[in-house]
Length: 132
Picture 1 (tube, rainbow, N blue to C red):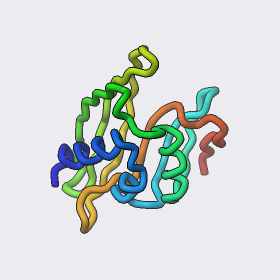
Picture 2: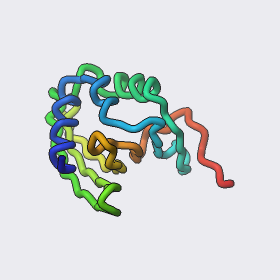
Picture 3: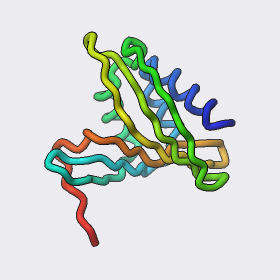
């Protein structure tokens, strides 16, 4: 399955808010990288349960009413690792908002799966990343 087809399937599930099936498309623990208000990065590993809880909060009943449009640019690091940059535009309460994020997809025996999510703005209440 191509990266484009994988995202097509992902987007259909996101539209309907089927978080459990979205979680089936991932490898856990999942790396999540974001930033913390105040200017520092934060990194965590989520279990499936943590991912499902966070996505239910973020997506609610799905993305269908957001008029979400995404432009994705895959960068194959190897035949089994693909970093995908996304520029997305959505409409929330009549206001158009844009966001940029990246996902690391890894090829598994069952096909592509996402393993790392990188997006700013999720780090409220998270501990800033520390070196060492």
